[in-house]
Image 1 (cartoon, helix red, strand yellow):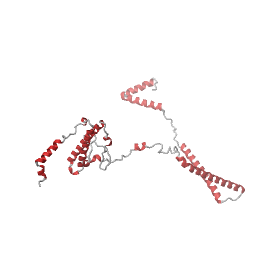
Image 2: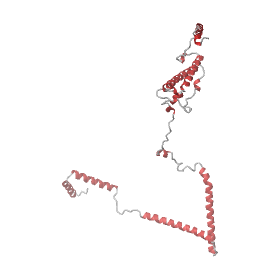
Image 3: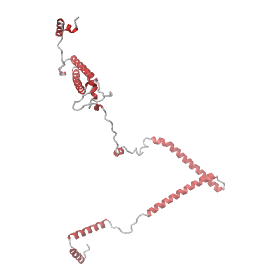
Length: 301
């Protein structure tokens, strides 16, 4: 029984293989430019071919043991095929076909989150990383988000947010404070009025008892005396406050010596400057002669 290698080398088998290759059509190559294609079906076929090549290379780039250089080469080849695919998709739209770019997949980071396509040094816009290429040195940093530094607020930023509401000037505008305070205010007013009426009744009873000579209860007498003592203490405090204000007004400093006004001060300063200039540019003898001449002529200046 002949082996498979011997069967393939037989004359009949080689003849059959040659005839089969002659019947086949010559292998077509993908056009270099997408604009050279005029048929929509052919454009879709070339796009599918590119998609197959991208799928095979993406599956290959998942292997982390290929080495850094091989991973970078594979990533470059995938990006080149993606750019070519975009050209063919644009050509398909021009020929009246569907728009595949509308439903294109987004790029994700190591955690699976959708991110923007990075643009590292000189690679051009839209450069993507796949598989193990995302973990290469210098690439991982592109997918890491920098920690958010909380900026310390300055005094200017703090005061910039302070307005009238901070100091409570607008608390009455929304009406909430009035609704809350109204019941409490009515309750306090009613209590104050009731207390005032009770004290008035006690005073009236005490006065009637004093006039008629009746005996008043000790508790009521104490309340009346306490109220009268409070009024006396308040009057004493008011009197002391007035005396203190009067003494402070009397302690104000009073000048008993006439002070020079602005004109006299300016005149004195001018005379002093004249004397300094004369002493600087004239001699003592000349000054004496000048003063004698002024006395003889009765000049007061």
